[in-house]
Structure formats: C-alpha cells, structure tokens
Image (cartoon, rainbow, N blue to C red):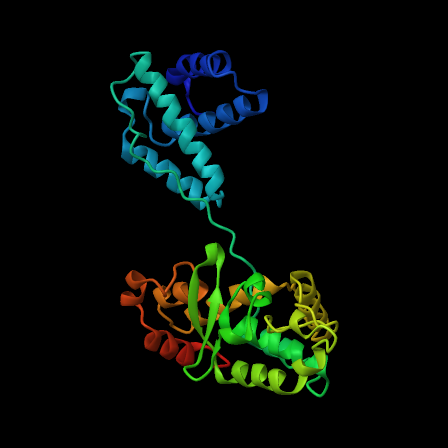
Length: 307
C-alpha cells in the first residue's frame, strides 16, 4: 500500500520549486533531491506514522539513516541524503511549518580516502632478490631497491644521495627532502651491506675516467658516469618487478608506501614513522626532542622486515 504522504506533498512541491528557481539546480540534481526526499517522507509517514513535519525529531532521522545504511548505500549517497533532508527542514522553518531543524546536528559521513596500493613483504622480497648481484648494473640496482625500501625515501631523494650522506658508523642515511629539509633515516643491515657492496665493487666501474668530477657528488650513477635520473630509477623498478612476476603497478613511490605500511602493521609508533618519512624534520631542535635517533634506530630494527 502506498504510504500516505499527503501531509507533506504540498511542502515538498513548494520546496522543489524553490530549489529549482532560487538555487538554479540542474535537472539531474533536482531529480536526486526529489528521489531522496520522497523516500524519506515515505518512511516518515508510512513507517513512523508521522503526519506533521514539525513532529519529526533527530531520533526519527537517525532511524531513517540507519535504514539507509542497512540497505548498503555508500557514504557519499548517505551524505547526499542528509544534505537533502537538512535543506528540506530548513525550508520548512522558513515556511513556518516547523520551528527547528532536527537534521541540523547530524554530521555528514566522512568520505573514505583511497589508500595507496602497497606491496606485501613477500612481493618486496621477490623484487629485491631479482637483480643479478654478480654484475655491476645488478649490484647497483639491488642497492637502489634495497635503499628505497629500507628508508622509505622519495625517488628524488634517492637520486640526490651523495656518498657523504652515508653515516653507516651510526646506522643512518642523511636525506635532503622537500624544501631542503634534512632528516636522518635508519638503514638496516641488509641495505647497508648492499650499498657498501655497490660502493666497493660496482660504482668504480661507472665512474667516467675522462670526467671524474661528473660523478663524484652522486651515490648512484648511470653507465656514462652521470647521476641516475628519476626516470631511470622508475625503469629499474619496473624492470625487476616484471621479472619478479608482480602483477601490481609497481613504481618507486610504492616502496615508500610499503615501507610505512609494513612498519605500522608491525606495531611501529606512528610518530616515528612520520619522522622517517620526512613529514617533519628530525634535525631541528623541536622535533629532535620528541624522537631521538636511538628511538628511530630501535623502531626500524625491531619492525622493518629487512633491518
């Protein structure tokens, strides 16, 4: 049996006319408002047996929204319904049909943020184990991949790394981030060994003897002795991901996402992970008093899969 919406029909008709003329809504937006409110008023009159808009309370609206949730509607659709209901009740006040807006205190649901795709620890290991560590390019590429995952640094930070940025005696890499902000990032034993192996065996073969100064200020070099570009590292990451049989879209920044995710999933403190990612500098005095290097090193060693 069709719900008796008669008490609300005249007000709804006037409201739809108002938003069409005063708000200048497009036809599809107007239809959405109409659909939302017809369903709402059908529930109010047919289920709750309310025949006066002034008799609708916050509790009644919450009951209705619970029904929408049970129907499996997404948060954006529910948010649109709340906006429609709230606006309708505001109009009813202006029309002297009610004294207050029972929907005024209802908060819009937050839209779920799309999380960046990450690699599993197993997928990361498969990629890291793919380079041929008996060749100079393979040794270099392994060191790059290990560095990206061990430190969570951005690809631009990786290309800008200099040999003088390595403080392996204390287990850290000095990273220059956005805005020239510096941070010290712990590096695990596996990454440290890979970088040292590259420095001792492979990097010398990349140095251009005719232009030695060209390469002395960058850690990772191309075969012409110049610094590797971001595109080059992107290609390196893609190449080994394909060889490892990873079906996901793998790019350098996914190592940064995976670094943070794996640490947090392991139980690492969020503040410490933020420091390692460089969202705030640990070099400045204020930050350094909150998270010292010893804590960062302990967190990294305890929770990173390849520390």
